[in-house]
Amino acid sequence: MNGSVVTLACLWVIAAAVVALLPRRWQYLPGLALLVAAGWLMWRLAGAYGAWVVLPALVVVVSMFRRPLAVLLCRILRGPGTGQGARQEEGSE
Image (cartoon, rainbow, N blue to C red; front, top):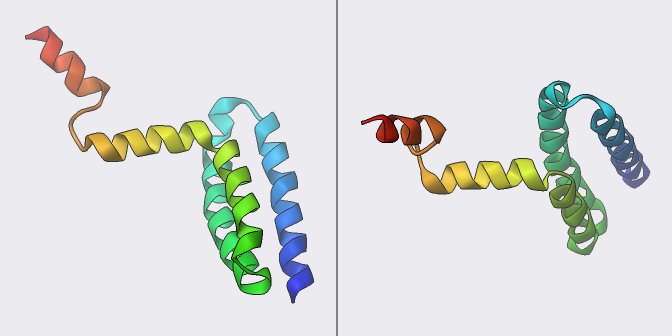
């Protein structure tokens, strides 16, 4: 069972490399699927090998998705109604 988790993690890396080769507009849906799968894979790796194995995997995932995660974090911290559209409406008054 442990070998299959490692195999899935290796396949995830290959899939991420393939998605990175796609044009940016085609990366959103596969990238979201990879991000969700990364959480599941890290949970399985932690169960099979311990939390210390997940630490490098977490660093890799955050490194690969640093910009989308930063945008998501900014949107969460700012709250609703504070995006680009809200700024443009304020400036037009």
